[in-house]
Image 1 (cartoon, rainbow over the protein chains, first blue to last red):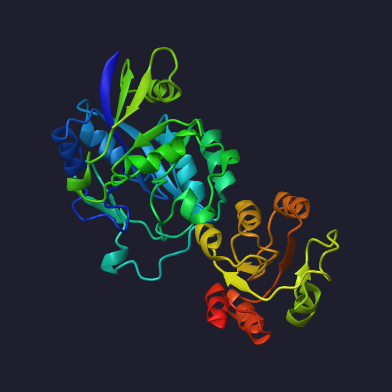
Image 2: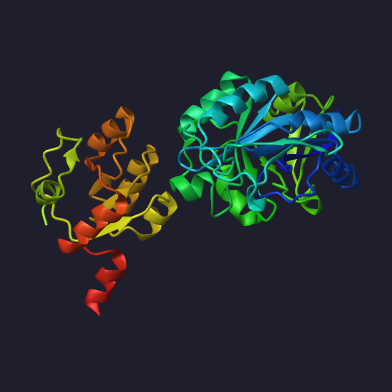
Length: 243
Length: 123
């Protein structure tokens, strides 16, 4: 088994709230600097820049295709997928349910599709910061229907988390894992241990300096999605160990 | 004021008619929020909740907070599983075509108060 430090929640310039320097080369450089061997790209309601970051990473680090869906209840759910096609299929369904941006030229609404070098290819015209029309149960089912894994994002945070929006952890929702944010206190995490789900820690990086500020160590054979799933389940000798 | 009187005055639709509690439950307080963590922390016991949140957890949180009835505003209608759970828990559910703002305004006019207003009246 090999030990992989993974930060499984990183935004790019596609997310309206991410900084302009969250380009694929900058993200990959920051990840390598922090000693990460695996990252997941999870923009709000879109997987549009996953391919660019995967290309930029080459063979240096593993890139997992992901997205952070905002459900109708405004709960953030991270979906991680085995390949970009599966992520794109979900991304397109979510996109169709998002409102159109009235003014795409506003700086704060910039949602850029970029290539592996970070050159701007175009802009998303739907409002990625909005809630999709998919309820929590439907969003989790949709992720799993595309063989993905569903992670309750930043459960310790006072906004857009399952607890802030829904008051209690919805055990029937079918989450595969729980994500602690970069600022989560260990005492808060103890509350979630009783749910019996693996707890990972991710940075939810919106700027290059955030990348790798929180990570999870996975012991597995390689940096593939299949190994990640086994490690989350603690199956076949693989395991995950929160930072 | 009795729930059935509130429902009549605000032209609410009762979506849990199998509960026979409508005429017997008196409410004097209420809370409006879509963040269920806030409902859990701040809704007055025995009051009415006005929300556009239709997730099943509305019922679970209402049980914990002791909410007597929920009014879903802006024509939001919860799924059948939510309705069934509410009936099991004895929580009366209503829907309104009006927005939260308009529903709450009318409830206030009828004399209902939020938890802060209730506290104030004791001082």
